[in-house]
Length: 244
Image 1 (tube, rainbow, N blue to C red):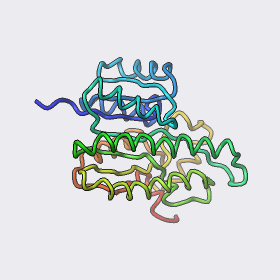
Image 2 (cartoon, rainbow, N blue to C red):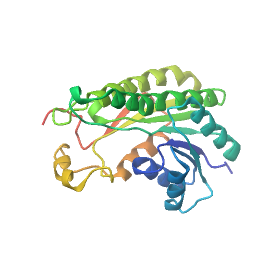
Image 3 (cartoon, rainbow, N blue to C red):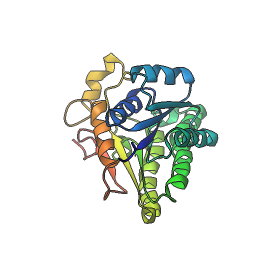
Image 4 (cartoon, rainbow, N blue to C red):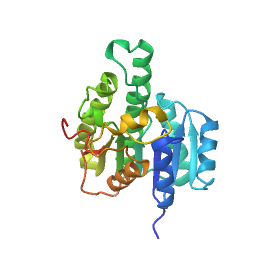
């Protein structure tokens, strides 16, 4: 019998990341999750039923050492890594002239470095094995900017990762490593305050916010799709389809 596959998930302590950890555990995978603090990982583990197949590794994913420790821990515990999900990210919507140097540095650190360093370690691990999956969680607004959602810096970085997904898919395709992205629309998570929810529903043609399970379903599909690579899959209620 084949041993369970192992997935590494960044930003695994809340929201979509926690939903992904739960979904993969339910599918029988080993899950190695990253968050900034041990406390957040302990809380996540409790919500996941303290599964022996969940391992938390704390650290700032913007630091290259964190990515190395994340994979070392996964390999020591479970033997190999089959899937990397670059989920960690921050999103700040505000007028362009209001972004501060601190805002820019935070998004470069978490969104950009948090994609580059884990992906480098994942590729180095997967290339000799001639198999693996990398999935990047980006943003629908990076596919189709929206005047009602001023978000030039997230569009800049997440849009770049959408293109990098395609480039890396081509680079790694000779090694049978599939690289894809999921671009969520506005998803119903605790980060959205109740007073904004009715407005947020209007930003998708389907007239509602997405559910975390709809994002996890898309990621699960991509990490089982052996003939799909270089795809940016919008899961956004039609938000990126055009003007409406």
